[in-house]
Image 1: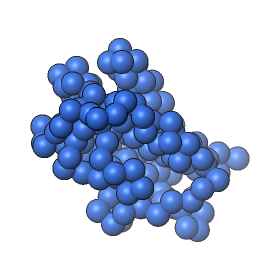
Image 2: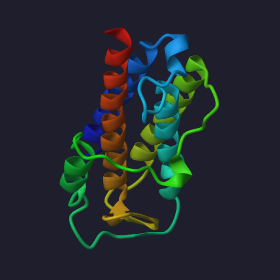
Image 3: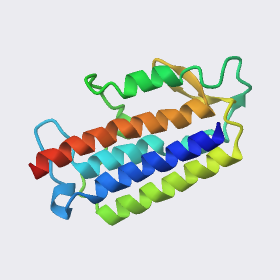
Length: 168
């Protein structure tokens, strides 16, 4: 379970870093089309969505009364359905300020390291009680980790679409 999660973390983080690295400094803070975020804003949103997750693992927990991966498939189906448009909660909306690529890359690497340490340190089968994902309720640590993967993969797809827009 942990090995698979660590491998998925590495793959997802590398994909994100690779696509983000492809943007020029000018493209990074440019809106590619109406209604879109800039690539920097997408990265900022991803970071904000991940902030606090490892800390949640230290919060109130309880033993799972169900399979610890029970909600993973539903999370996958929702977040990897690219035809379904979502609205971000206000608390993870990106900044409107210009952001620097190397700083974003460093922050992504640091957050990935924190998540890796959390995967290694904690029992992933326990339910975190301090946060409820709308439509899903409380999640196990394992499900929270996969939420991060699927949410990030959704935005990697968005970044790839933006990259194509800029480079075609």
